[in-house]
Image (cartoon, rainbow, N blue to C red; front, top):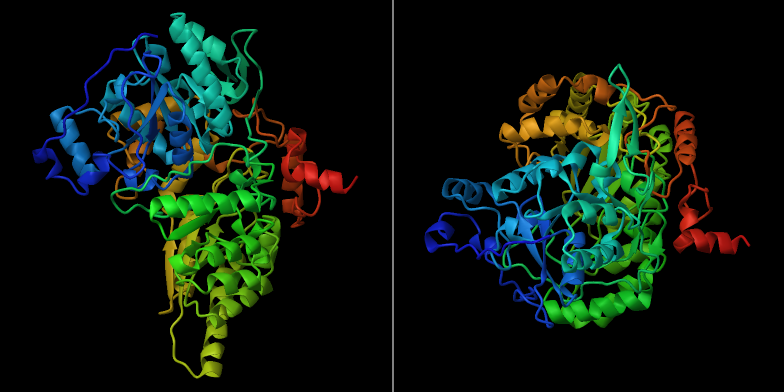
Length: 630
């Protein structure tokens, strides 16, 4: 595993004067880590590049980046540096001047690192991964790399079906990364000390629970071209890989020395992670399934973290993070304590999208004392039967009552998230979205009459197209056609014509490609390669996405996009991701799918254990509910 050292790239004034926000490429942020090339023992550091396949402003808003950055740099013999995709102006200059992707900390070329780690947060980032590797001069295909190349690894939510990109990575980490990353680094130390070759390192890495080495498995297909199975090529390699989780969040590493960027980022605030997992069980939501079980941080831990981060960062806003923040069992006490302890600092609490059944009047009263940046709710569907099908477990009356109380407290902006194309959806369900908005406007108008004040409410309605995701009860479903997408959006456009309502919708074609990448197998790698060769990068941005480019690649590879995306999958079929154990049993997903067909709901995990499989981890809320039942 010998690596050649490379000097840092010098960014000249001439280059920096030509680009927007040059500070994003220079480092020097508050709390940025700086190390040399050698550890305290005089041995070379392990150089780890944390690569976020998007621009700096997006990547720096990601909590996983901050956790891994802090965790790895806390190790004496590891130096973790950040690498982002450059913005278009910088990318053009780098390509013209043959400047490879480089780290923010030391402007170190990506190919000079020992380990290059990508976080896969969304499927359309895959083309950016390939673009960054290619510009760095690192072979794209795992089979083409030698001992002189970095180890290319991946993690993140998309790896619960990593097959479309499996051939590009040396290894993939399934689940939460804090422990498995340290185990991988320990193995890398041993490999370097004993001069293992790449093949030996990958075989040894496959023995670490939660690590998937794609080159040690082979995919099989039927004569008709359907996926058949994935099997190990070596008897020492596990046939099934169980995700890694952190059992006690109070004891896991938390980055308290907050990285403070020199430019404005998407979420420019302190991040406070309340808990991991989700108890709600929404049937379309992959995160709600793969991050189980719910594990909370204690109130005492969160308050201590808040005190430290506010004191050492200069921030005045705290983002309370989790999949469903309103469900944190001590949320009211947490908010009140933070506001009381930091009243003189004028601290503002930022609440993400909230579940309406968990929003208390006390909570709204607490956050009402801060500046009102707007409230965000995600009803997801427009009618009650549609919400029951997806197990949203909220009533229209919940939303109307909560919104009315928020209006009374002074909120004048409301953002609502919905999905279009959910299984079983009708035009009446879609029209219900507009009906709900007009009921909110009626409540507002009545309030203005009672208060004898003329104020204006602004409602933003955002819709995304449903994408069948692996490890959800809807993983067997097909996606609606482009024509159906267009029909539903136009129906809403017509019904939401009102000066107080702004309607935004996600692109049709990109949703279709997302579905193909979410459900695809290893044959998708050839599609991705051709799309990359045709110039794809930052496909998640509408201005850079090209649907014809994707269609051409599918045609060249001989894959049927419509068949892959639109057709339902038989329940008895083997799926490309079946070899992963996310802690949720397939039998549970099938039960939930049947309940969706009957529009029956399932209780929250906080109220009853539904025996989804996450109880096997013997931690968190699963253990608490089972103990309570005796």
